[in-house]
Image 1: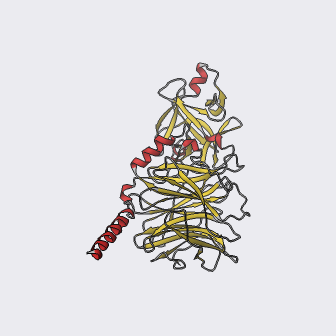
Image 2: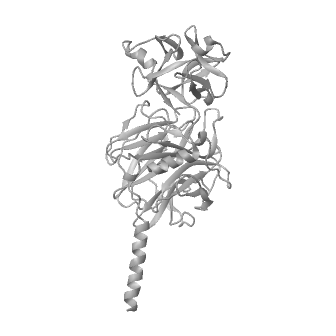
Image 3: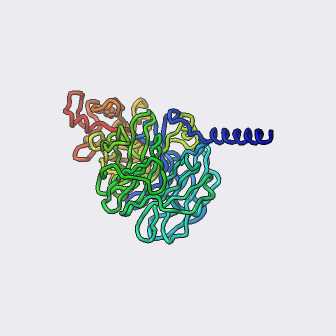
Length: 457
């Protein structure tokens, strides 16, 4: 009888553990959250706190909290890089991040920042966890659930004394961790691993420091030193790192994001694939995706509709918009020396591209564009050229600064802007300068593209 009672107790405990350790179904995820830190070319946009953005399509992102941090470390270097969000087996989240404030990559650090969160609307239990006693860095954490161990693996970039490798520590609570061990050391230096588990296969994407390319490896067990690289090298732009693997919530297909490394270049590039297990990644046109403003190396996780709504309600949407060019999708409308133009993002002052799209000064059915960083000045046409001028409240100014938003002349899902007081003319770029010109649906394809913009954040 005692043995039977003990068996029943053990069975009940096992059932409870299995109930806790069921990962929420990916079908419940209908949106995405992006965690990141920020930098800009001359670092006016640098902020080493935890930032969040949301997306419903996984490609175009809306910063939350006016692109200000939602949590900031209070120990260690007092700054973070490379934040990673993991949904744990109980459905709640843990956030890990590199303990590094700024760009002094020469310093050694044996710790990671950690927060707990039920739904990412608040962050509790802040702590730092000690991972090793090596004289090296602890960069770019990723984490995954290893069902065979009944533990989470925390994988990070470090140096084992001879080369750059990935280390791993195992944990059940992200407080106490096992001794560190080498997780992936393929015979050349590596950086920035990202791990996802799909079915029974573990996928590890990483940067090969010898070639500067991104590669994918896989394992049937997820155990240390069990991965085999199976993809060709990938790169867009001049340099790339920090691969991010994201499964499409629709249930088919994957995206791979890569950080351009330098804040003076395009911040992110992206690829898509219908089969993560194959070796076929297609580079996405930048028209398709828009990273969060000034975002750098982070992570992306699926969230439910309720979690998406909760994040928007808690942190708020931006009070500004940006205008992305249709045919030069790496360029955004901005003012420079009070002249309207489109320039390649990122640039500084990055605020030059931020607009308050307000009811039209001449007709509230239209829109006007007020500068965020020079309030009281609006985009207006003068001799058909677009300038940023102070509102003198004359009828002429109000008319020049008012536009009617219409379906995009080149893409109805985007937008075009017709002049209020010269109604056959539309806002467009020409030689990267903004102006208004006569346009219609019968205009050339190039002219229509020049006059088409994505209103984004």
